[in-house]
Image 1 (cartoon, rainbow, N blue to C red):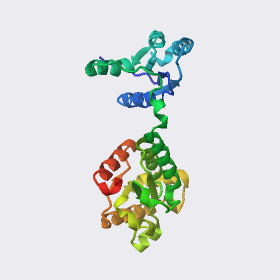
Image 2 (cartoon, helix red, strand yellow):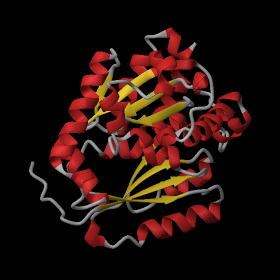
Image 3 (cartoon, helix red, strand yellow):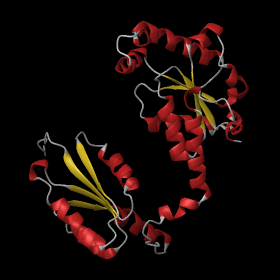
Image 4 (tube, rainbow, N blue to C red):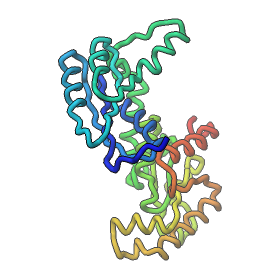
Length: 278
């Protein structure tokens, strides 16, 4: 059966008794499987009956021109969940989809505690993640060469290759202390990594990119500059790649990879080497 495409984005509501951030990320992974556009609207902190009715009112007021609304919910309160489930939309109860089968398999009831995930905010894992974020911010773009011995990974690559977002993603998602250093023409002229990194070579992971894409990115920042010229981008990428090969540094191209794919590749590499995480 062929379903005519709607040129307008489908409206997707994320209804949660907490922040809804986790549910939003999960829903994005599911929706990414479809060649369609979506507009996500998060409705957080729906933890009372009144708030549930307000959420339903908002969902039911969706303009019909956008098609039937889609709702992802993570609501542990049965009464609140039942009210939201009556919305005139496709309601996908993420707890019932995953928690109920797990209860049956594990032979136990879940706690059904609202915001249970966030009650762990004082755990060591949470504190480590915050510490990792602060570390990565302090060691962004070669700002500091202090405490590199504490880094879990040091990302290197030319300017605008994706070092900063990857470092922060590793810190926020995995609690890894990720420093990053730019490779600049002076490094290529010396034919050597920045001197501050030499003692930590076993922690280094490289990022590269197609010169054409790099030129596009740099032109958005400094249009018409030598910095953004294709020939300069080709030179820097060729020199950086040659240096990584010479120094036996693993690397990945960021050209067509999502940040999740880049981070996964890095994690696989550094976790195979105990000297990096030890």
